[in-house]
Amino acid sequence: MSRGFSALEPVKLSMPWEHFRHGADVGVRGSGVSRAEAFEQAALALTAVIADPSHVHGEVLVDIRCEAPDDEMLLVDWLNALIYEMATRDLLFGRFAVTLHDHVLDAKVWGQSLDRERHQPSVEVKAVTYTELSMAQREDGTWVAQCVVDV
Image (cartoon, rainbow, N blue to C red):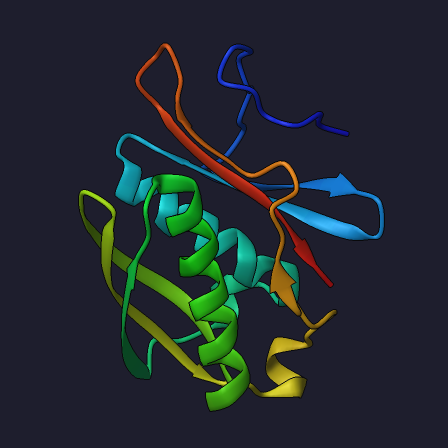
């Protein structure tokens, strides 16, 4: 079980995204060589809470734009926007292209209609929380974005 990420302690990541336990909820963590890539990987981790992202095809394109006062709030807004789009369009997303300009995020996300037999969703993600919320650059230059989602 992982502890929360702190900018002062190294986080050993075995993949660009991962989950970490947090009580009854699930932590999502994305890493990358850029802030944008960390946001993309955190989104992939969000999808993976629900279903295997490799089973999600890019049949539908959705544009998303978020703006926030800082990177941490932008991460919350980004992941909540994805949750909203999944819920209102009955979609799952499996591919993300994020562009960041200061604290404005523009993204193209690709997904497909939820198919319970194909995707076998395990839980419903209700919302992003501020618990263990962090967006920081490690000493090795890698960016790490994380938070806990309410399931």
